[in-house]
Length: 114
Image 1 (cartoon, rainbow, N blue to C red):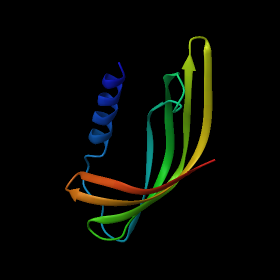
Image 2 (tube, rainbow, N blue to C red):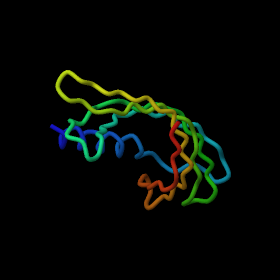
Image 3 (cartoon, rainbow, N blue to C red):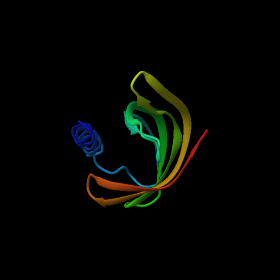
Image 4 (cartoon, helix red, strand yellow):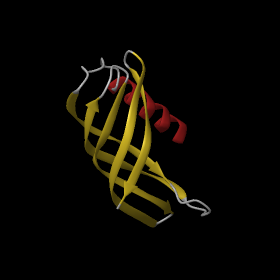
């Protein structure tokens, strides 16, 4: 089940990000929504499926590189039988975005959660 959810999530991410690059020296807003699958390490608990939603601001510096920041709400947790742990976070990503090929990009950077 976990592999199916992970595959579908990755497919949706690649599909949604398959548009062309924007012009240089421009700002754009990017709403996003997705699925989170989380668990606690060193605990005998099951993974919990949650959601992520937010708004990013992207500045396209050059043809192949840009900066991304924004705010998002993330739902994390774990479960064990009837017990259910849910944690809500406000995350602030500060990322660099590199376009590998037309329609294909990668992100790297920091994300602060509160």
